[in-house]
Image (tube, rainbow, N blue to C red; front, side, top):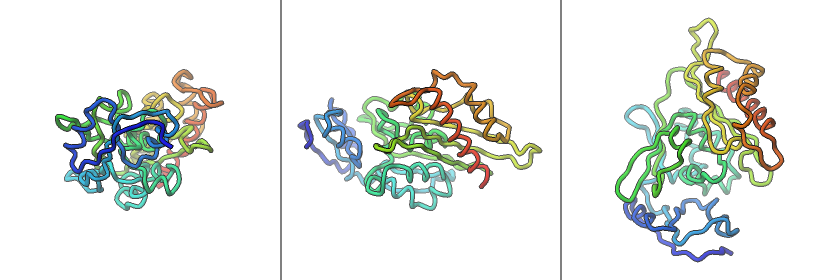
Length: 283
């Protein structure tokens, strides 16, 4: 039983949707995997649910003119997992989608909903941040874009709705990977890490370039680990070198909770990063 009363509307265009969402108390309904649960438990409230599933312009995966990928916000997690272009272009994103919940959740959960649920750790944000993606957003009076780094730092602009994500064309030799330790009850990440790396095989040390590392669950919000990136850049690090780079980060950077300490989460994030880097550079 849902504990709050609300108006339900189902627009057919993005313009209708953003106009409806401009009203105070309006919430986006896409897959509903988080929102409906929160309404049932009383953790969330809404005076109006704006169901985006009738806005067909928000669906689909396509190549961009620049060789990247544009993924509509209503694309389901199951569609991400199954799409060969996503698996080839952004393996970490496909792996993050596969790690999310169970088949029922993946069949209903959407890209936009997963990214918009900033009140809890979810799987796609670190993969999107590591990829250096761009988020396309719609507002009542127009559309715009938000860089993944800005999304991680500031969240989404007030009154906006995610319409798509755009992944840049991969550089030669670019690879990515995702690793996660999940909460056994909720399946949300205790810690999840995504890496994107380019390996320069022409260099004598076979070092890493273009390194991006993003984490969620272990930190207050999805975060890019630029300090770790600087320590590991240009090298081909083994597990102990990765863990040493994490030990050099301030313990306060990590957020304890549910029986976990900051020290444990820092170590766990390092272990998952080492695994992800090992898989990404072994391909």
